[in-house]
Length: 279
Image (cartoon, rainbow, N blue to C red):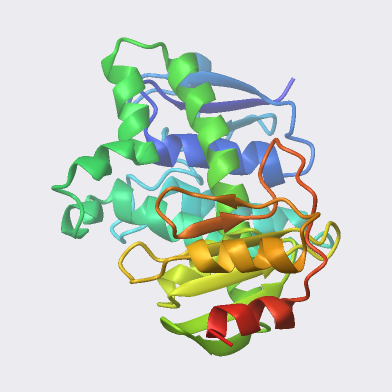
């Protein structure tokens, strides 16, 4: 049986290195995971001496960076190794783009560059995955518990990074318009992340219409003067059979919601945009 070996008290780099091998190195999907103390190897054997055992972030072998002078990470070494080993099976373009972003963040964290992040002193920093992994370890969680938590977290990170990259691409297809509160954008797409990406780009309003269900979601930035009350009432007047939910903030208007079936509107994006333009 194949085994991936990393160090006890696994950190984000160790977790990501293991995750990369199990997710993207052909034949290693079902590999077991074991842990060694620093400056040791699995069963005391020379590192990289067994083709069925990969040491990552430990052992000073081909997938450990601690003996190197350059600023890098075990995750970066694993990523490069995986691409070499895949040969005629290149990574999907979106997967590779997401992994490049992920590995850059892991490298920053593993080399203490996160200390220069502007939010490092803020309470929200404690919600970051590398800090949560440390929290599991700090609560006397086992190595296995910390690793399993981290692997699940990396699945979620990978999912979200890919959706964000795709959303940025989708957003370029959107229709920009001037709402009664400022610049806005409307787009027909199945990727819900365009709402966040649009808000991050500074649009006061982002409208997404799902091409399959016809449902609509409208997000407004919290720091704008947007009030969607009149738009909600107008949509109901124009399409009385549709269902809409207006959030108490008046900046979130939903015609589709997670976990709840709502009757989608028959209004087109153009009709919705005209109402939000104040016409």
